[in-house]
Length: 155
Image (cartoon, rainbow, N blue to C red; front, side):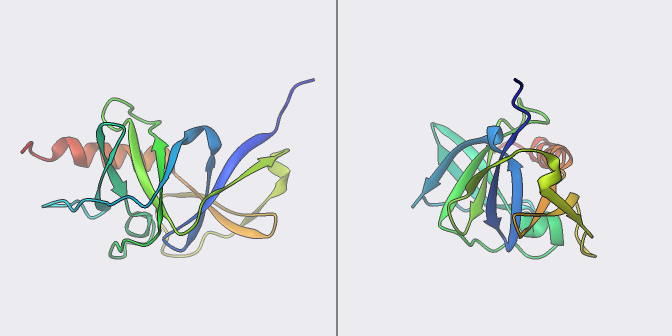
């Protein structure tokens, strides 16, 4: 019998409940410092040293709402890049709490809602088990971040 369920995580990030495929999550780290960047991109909160790599920490608030990035959250969810893994193999997303993993038996468990005005890079707004969630356009976001990073002159 085939398992058609979807493992997903829901984490509170910049005031949004983000829902992402669980296989994208490489790690969740707590109590770490995000280093500042001399000339950060608008979407960049800083960098995180993780497993011997320096990875960018993204501001979904800036990407989705065009609002100034603020560092909130005591946990960083390390995400495996999907769009261009050479340029962006991993990146971090600060969350206010540990993300919860859910097993969705089918897409029918997600009730589609209207995407709020003023939001960018959102594939869908849904409600999962009563929780309003945003499904971001991950491939587009990663492509934008990778392009910005490759355009930045090397120090």
